[in-house]
Length: 211
Ligand code: PRT
Ligand code: ZN
Image (cartoon, rainbow, N blue to C red; front, side, top):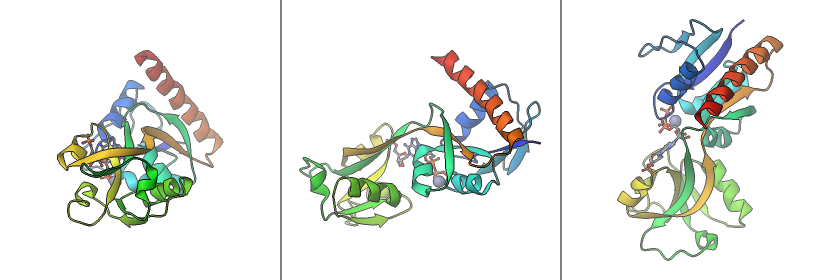
């Protein structure tokens, strides 16, 4: 019996995900362009996937666990358990408007057009704040939307803030704080749960050593 873990194939979470496994004493052959590999010293099979697909794979039980941004877990609305925050991939999902816009409160978003790749989370935020606005879902380059007249505001991930700055935008609301998490399937077999507990024990030891 092996535990199957999904991690990002390439992108911002890939290196830190591999590093975390390594720090847990798990050696994997990380061949370029491989879709899956196995650990040599732990019963672990590793799948390399697009981050957007990871929650679905976990819900379906194709992967038992996965490392993915909390923002993706919440947006995809799949049935998975978040079992551990991992302390990397930290960012926030924020509303931003053009620098010149007079913005005082969330009410200023009323009847505005908001471009985002996170329509579910944004809709929930607007409802929670009693705001009616139009959501324009776009898959990338969200930060250019106000400049080309596509939207009045955007909601996108921010870490340093330099992308917003370079596009003449200012951050006005934090919608969500996010970091990479370990997510798990709801119905793990007892043997898989034992392996997950073993992995979690090591992750927590690694985290403790860093504090
Ligand atoms: O190919 P795949 O679909 O797997 O990857 P992806 O391109 O969808 O995701 P990727 O690799 O960009 O991000 C993976 C995860 O990293 C995200 O889901 C977040 O959980 C986390 N993360 C942390 C970030 C950022 N920081 C971040 N800054 N994801 C994206 N960004 C982008 C943001 O969208 C914006 O374009 O970086 C830009 C802003 O950065 P600053 O530093 O200029 O503010
Ligand atoms: Zn993605």
